[in-house]
Length: 215
Image 1 (cartoon, rainbow, N blue to C red):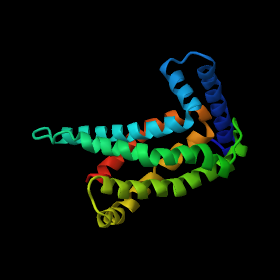
Image 2: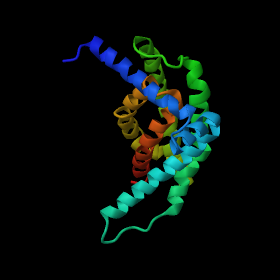
Image 3: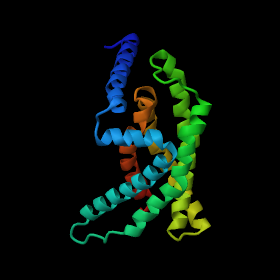
Image 4: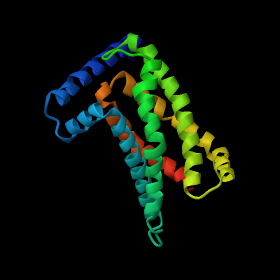
């Protein structure tokens, strides 16, 4: 059994190791990952907006592929308009919100020095996760379920009905996944690499949201 002090020491050691491994991406080497990190650092707003659209579009593409595989005998035709609408929501709504939230609002609400580790990082990380899981998540799912319903030709009444039907389900599922992802992200991953982890998880999360929206 690992005692709390041992867990804290292991956490600090792991975070320092990740920071040491991440430094070469800034100094040189790293190939495509270095280019991606550099793009995110130099274009924090536009890169986040562009990524949100492509990530949600990729999530829908994954969902449609799984749906087609489930019905191999009579697979439904691929719907590019559906994928484009998912991407459009990312580019036009959630992406701009995220750019302001993660680059301005959250750092202002919870200042956190770079490289902060151990006990000193617990409180600011907890605050960031709490804000992310309330203000950010609520905006995300309210705007997604309602906005996507309108983009797909639904009425205001349809959008409200969609929220009543799926908002609680989506948010409860979020609480089983994202607090842990973001706790690790804010506490251990260097700031310039946090987008990499979120992007990977978000593709699968986008697939889940697409399934909820179109089920």
